Amino acid sequence: MKVRRYKWGHPIADQFTSPLKLNDDARRMLLMAGVSAGFSSVFGTPLAGAIFGLEVMAIGRMHYTAIFPCLLAAIVADQVGLMWGVHHTHYAMAFIPQMSLWTLAAVMIAGCCFGLAARIFADATRVIGAMMKTHIAYPPLRPFIGGLVVAVAVYLLHADRYIGLGIPVIVDAFQHPLAPWDFLGKLVFTVTSLGSGFKGGEVTPLFYVGATLGNALAPLLHLPFAFLAGIGFVAVFAGAANTPIASTLMAIELFGADIGIYAAMGCVVAYLVSGYTSIYRSQRVACLKHRIVPEGIKLAALPAWQREQTQPEVSHDKAKAER
Image 1: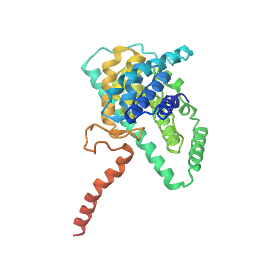
Image 2: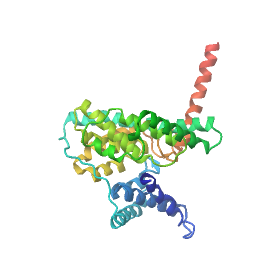
Image 3: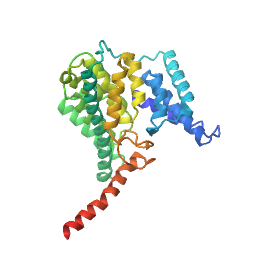
Image 4: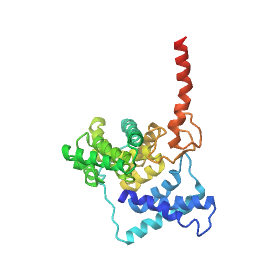
């Protein structure tokens, strides 16, 4: 439930639009502030929360008109949580390597892996969801079958560590080596659950995937386990949510300012490598990453647009072959 709560800020804020008779711009600002408040209170990261509300709405563009409401909402939400005695998980970052050409290059290599993991996570969730809709017409039956598959697989494979939030495993990733396939196990079980119709609960699993993937890559890249687990923690989320700046700030708030440059590099590389995929299908493309796609298009409509672009080429090649 913890992961889902940060989304509550959006619908709660939306309830005030009608009574206050807000126009579209004011409503948008209020919704962004609600998202910032929810993110900040759940993860204990007010700076990241403030920027997340600005950054998540559209790829590559932030609406600075809402920067003060988002910042204020994030700070207040975090303080209210602390007043209620809410405690956030502490992730130990004992050592951060000194800046060197190899360390920066290794973080870039790891960032590519984190971006690919984010892309696979988002695409697999979408593909499984489409398959469920195609083969199971009755919507309530989809989560039943998906849940049954997950439950049986967990029982037969003794894979309890791959279900739930997985906070203990994330903490372990900062302390000692884990099984190198842990990230894959969590990814498979999570995308199966989400694709089957279970909504919410994708953020902390992304932290899990990133931290355990970083843990697995650490010995290959000759970097400390905790250091690369921390980079993966935020970078996979940056790639899956298209929020590299908020994710970098999150790393600084959770692990300290010394990790900032490395976190920024890992998050930006993951953001670029992940392409035009996202766990938030309502995101729009406001600024291109590295390929030409229509500006303003929703990510949910992108696969259909790509099929339309390739269809003429396929027809032309087929006609040429027939001649």
